[in-house]
Structure formats: structure tokens, C-alpha cells
Length: 142
Image (cartoon, rainbow, N blue to C red; front, side):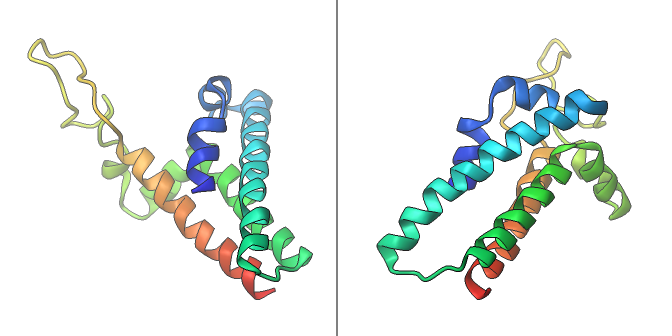
């Protein structure tokens, strides 16, 4: 839940538009996004752990949130995740819903049609979900 809130409600428009750009502007925007995302996760996780009586170690939190932050930053640079998708034979799915895809949605006038998502977004979120599983295991097991 905190991932979804941090990734969609807390992330600024500027971060979302810049984090995939090459060079330092993109890296810094991605770093700012991941910092606010991690703070959001910590702000939800700590009270939840107290309410549920979970005993989490500082090292587990650092390891789990650290792995999550690094993998999220890596994926959100966009070219990295696109390259992974291509290497796994998922380049066509990655471009689904974009003008680059041969079957992109169009209006009756042949212009790009609005839609609710892309293959890139689906692969991005599923990559983050896998990373969240690893983070949760580290947080609870260390």
C-alpha cells in the first residue's frame, strides 16, 4: 500500500517526467523520488509494526528498505528496465500501449487513443512488487 501511495501520490510531476532522462538531471530526480518513496514506506511501516507488535531490527529495516530503494531507483531510470525486458524477450510487451508498438491504440482519426496503461508500466510495477517481496523478507528475517 505504501509503495502505491509513494509511487503515485507522493511522487511529483517533475520527478515523474525527469527521472528517466539521461545524465544528472534524471539521476537526481530519481533520487528525490526514491527518497520520498522510502520515507512514505517507513512512515507506514513503523506504526503498523507497533500496532501489530512486530519486533523489527534496525538492520532488517536498513537492509530491506535499502534493497527496495536501490532496485526502485534502477528500474525507474527506465532504460535499465527496458533493456532487461528486451533481454528477456519482452520488448514487444514493454512497448505495448505506446506509439512505438505496431498495435498501438488509435482513434477513428488514426491519432493515438487514451488508455489506462502500458506494458512498460505493468513491467515496472511487477518488478517493484518482486523487489518488495525481497525487502519484506529481509525486514522480517534479519
